[in-house]
Image (cartoon, rainbow, N blue to C red; front, side, top):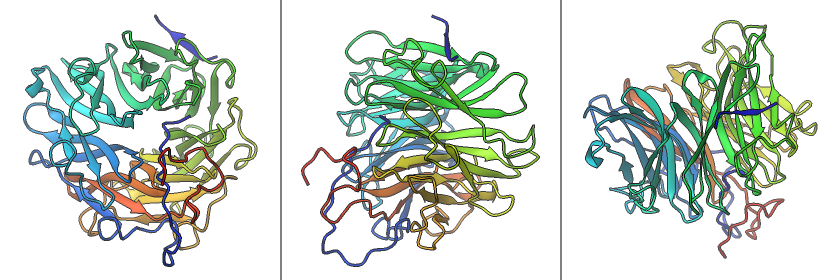
Length: 475
């Protein structure tokens, strides 16, 4: 049973675009040359000599722009800072956002010198177009959750807790954020200090103080939380991995709470909790690590994971794992084999995701995943793939007949490749956008972006198969 201890996914409105009369297009999943000239672009904050700018998350707007949040190094005493950029449809930064397309949170300028090590982990948009970033901050030696809200133009929103910033009371690190687009309720998910449980922060803009809670899985001394979404009925779905007593590996967990966030939703799974382990490697070497979860147009929950496939650490070899639960928390037999499947992005003993990846679900049931495949941490690329609704590889994606595509995220293909994969992925105007950290020369990393072609819409502008994500705007 999923217990509390102590006191529809963030959907994106797809702009409907008319494609009638256009020339022959590239295959889905190819780099889009109308973005950055070759399908890629980048931005360097370079606030200090280390110049370590790392992407954490992405959210797409309905107008073709997308917002990327990350963490940048700075030698001013804060060590690292939360940073946000907005990217235009052509791959350039949006000059009307923040200062020259970027926003950097500086605690010293706000009279908060005790705060250091600012970090971004997740980003979301509310129904008014405001940007909410979740991460963490060091408060006198204790890591605490950090929530920052910006206006749609990239300024701190002082109507949010007086200065645009909220800091959680718990000793925890935030990992994910989701916003109920009907009620405006903000949910933040994280892991408590020592990985003893999942932590949630719920704030209702209609009034009242934030509600913080810690959740445990009985019999699991280690519980980590990675991703959260909010269903159209206001119920949050959370996920991560746990280590159960008497077992030898980490398995995936997925839980649903009631909309008020006060207790588990017992109509989901077993007492509000569903679990799954791929267990494709020998005991002691079959850990699963959740990368992302998302809600599809039929209310099913899709999980993307990295799963260990051989003896040794994750550095040796891993595959990608996909799970689909139905709305009641049971494995969906119409997906993969009994509701789950694994696949190898890289042949042999390569590693398919270095702890980073994301999901973007199309309204026609197809599943787009962005990952970080690489044979070593010094040879990582940006990877993307698409599955059919059944879980089979969509071989029409990528142009090579494999359903997989991989490339260096650096715009000119130069520099190193470490951590250059897709840390986050999304859909904007039907096309696929991804962001990650592209290395030029250790330790210099930049924010890297890419856009892939995707014929997600019919020529008449109507979305394939579903009205779930139709734009609210008249094309």
